[in-house]
Image (cartoon, rainbow, N blue to C red; front, side, top):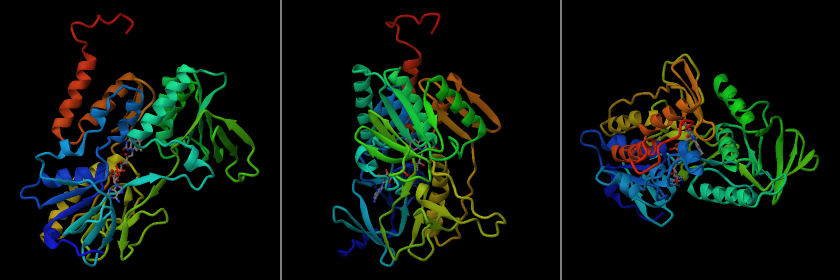
Length: 413
Ligand SMILES: Cc1cc2nc3c(=O)[nH]c(=O)nc-3n(C[C@H](O)[C@H](O)[C@H](O)COP(=O)(O)OP(=O)(O)OC[C@H]3O[C@@H](n4cnc5c(N)ncnc54)[C@H](O)[C@@H]3O)c2cc1C
């Protein structure tokens, strides 16, 4: 590793500008007398992933859900380096980036999140589309346009995985296709939305039924081909797969893989690759490294009688970790004891097609257009930075109140 620039030893370096990394950087920068903060993120834009479905459906625009980092961070006390961290040496407290920069850090936050996991299914890497970023949305939108403008009998899209992403995507796709192609949702497990509340599962089931989305549970995709998938029981193999289903496109949403840059010495991980940290989100040892978001697998707080629960890989966890982590970084720099992270499950929200959603929070349940509006509002308050919140709110208000030149709404609307 080239010699690191030692001037960064008093600084906090945050690796990954997703929910955990960006919100930690902003929380830390808002504290009195923050240390120098450097965010290293290869992407140009922060993508508010829970609203990616609305981008696909055209209900929201890229500027609303994917602000540029340089705009977001301007004047906020956070420097941004557009690069990818490849290796971290916790003995020397230094890191190496893909573009060959070697930097020293005082404290480091690892928040590189999770990526897709295609479980080595033959053809999945080559032939299936993903749904995690702006390019995925563009590709999928082009496919939908093609299917709408060149309808053929019995054409269909296959969505693999009936977790929240698969269910929400299947509903939006069915609405967008408006009958030009069918949508099939394939799930290996016995039920859709296994980790969700019964109310959400029930609402999702109804929403899928209303849209004629065919759901197959207990069914495994054994291979993805250029024009379809091979299906079978979860315990069968590609050779003994039972059925071949033709498809104009396959979208893979099942499973997560947790990756981080190489860390020396290699820290302990759980079987899925998440980094085992203590309840304060610090990695064991004196390397000054903290972990947050999807990549973190925190232990239970000291003295806790409950074993540590595996936290869901969702934005809500990352969002809650950010202020605690900002305070712990300051405590750590000051040599003070750290506080444990305690996850509070605030409920769940799911988009179920154009203008439709469901939510559960504080014992209340709600579904339909009002839930859709409240979901948007809830996310508005979580957008990074007041400027972005105001810009998005202005856009949504303009949409809700037509301009004087627009025709008045009909009674049925
Ligand atoms: C389509 C979709 C919809 C979702 N909807 C919801 C929802 O409705 N509600 C909810 O709570 N959660 C939702 N989630 C999950 C939620 O988005 C994630 O749990 C959350 O983004 C995790 O935050 P994170 O910071 O750990 O990781 P991420 O947000 O994934 O951020 C990781 C960042 O690290 C960067 N990075 C990766 N490697 C490196 C490297 N080597 N060096 C530097 N940077 C690197 C990446 O570019 C990325 O920006 C959704 C996810 C998806 C994909």
